[in-house]
Length: 177
Image (cartoon, rainbow, N blue to C red):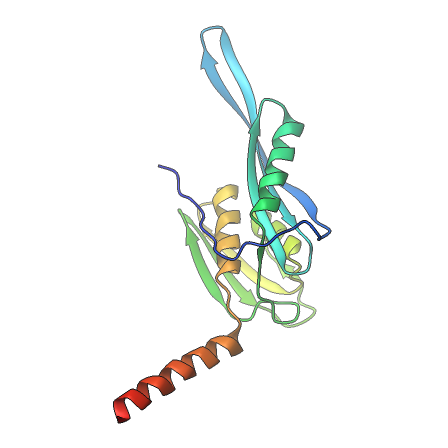
């Protein structure tokens, strides 16, 4: 059974200037009575370079059609991510399938220390300084989905601290009564 990437904070990309980048193109064949029937699957990342990014898969009998379908799906699945200047707010480790991705914030001027699918996703998101490590599976699709999942789970540290302090104060007030 296939895993489904579930992300809550999707956005409308209609007003943004979006750049698409092909991450992975795969030729697949189905063996039928008359021989092999070839088709193509494509993985595309779409982003505006300003905190919005999405990935999509497309399949078709022709390469351009598969890429176009993947681009449409990537635009439809775009999310907004939290940035702290030119990097991410805090370190995170995310697992999707057998792919595991570690992302750490980096000081300004470090650049993007990442490879493959992770680099494509963070560049499309507009992150300029980040340290990453891809562990486990090298499957480009699962690594890209793990990266997107990790970026979607990032929260604003100040808002999260305020929320936690608020619940802490409420629980102390209830205990004091």
